[in-house]
Amino acid sequence: MKYSWFFVLFFCGYFVKAQNIPLYVGTYTSDDVKGIYYYNFNTLTGEITNKKLAVKTENPSFITFSNDKKYLYAVNENAENSYVKSYEVNKDGTLAFINKVSTNGNGPCHVQTNEANNKLVVSNYGGGTISIYTIHKSGSISESPQVIDHNLENKKSHAHSAKFYKNNLFVADLGRDFLAQYILNDKEFVLKENHLMNEGAGPRHFEISKNGAFIYVINELNSTITVLQQKDKNTFINIESVSTLADNFQGKNQCADVHLSLDEKFLYGSNRGENTIVVFKRDAKSGMLEKIQNISVNGDWPRNFTLSPNGNFLLVANQKSKNISVFTVDKTSGMLDFSYSIEAPTPVCLLF
Image 1: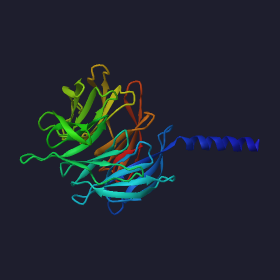
Image 2: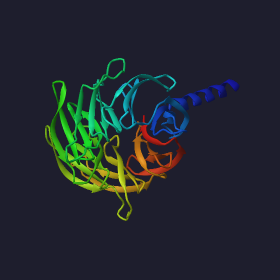
Image 3: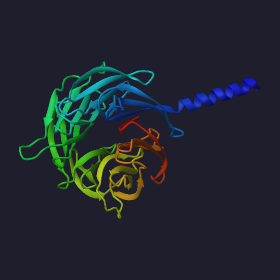
């Protein structure tokens, strides 16, 4: 009987451990905040545990993985002395530094890799430039073979995020109010078109549907989401712009992040000021959105959020209140229910 209980406890412990996956948190550093942090996240219960410092580094404000998750890339947001760094992911979750290269602009705020895993792009908010790099098999980053400058003499660029989609590179430029679309031509990306948002909208982040037919751009300055629909192979048209705010909200707000649910039936966005996550129901055929919920983040200034890999939970990084809030996701309705929050060191980016 004693042995039976031992095996029950052993397998229960193994089962719980098997549900744990790594959660990395990018931060703004200070005297008591040292760099990128690592947690265990339980995909069954939503519990966040076992915090530790993964690597000491300055202001790793945005982080991303290689496709195989063997390497992690982070921008260090340090004015003109800014870098993008590559790390190898150790078995214990800590990060081993590989190399660093200049971001070719100040205020880098976003980094992303492509599906082929041999390209990396950094968006420099302060510099208004986009730097494209080659990733080597070792995980190291080359010096940038292409730097795109969006600045004009009479208008300042604020490149805020960039993503690869097949042979395209899309860039959200908050300063110039467009989503730029570049196409790979031989070894460089060449401008195809600038898809304009409303003047003063401030496009910040965006999501591309899996089939590439729709792009959802969240606009920081006028608190809207703009829906772009693919008209032909390489052209998009603006079909809708919807508010992210509750109808009765009267204060100031700045939008931040946006994500589609795994089944793409719902779209989520973060409101800094209203301090909510907005939930939209999405029509898969038309791409149009219907607002169904604005729920408090139980914190201040939701800079970034992410969905767990199984889609059962949504986690929010509340920068000013220094906490991570966890919500359960109703996969049928798309709506969120607040579960709990934990204190966290100035979280600004969450990565599974």
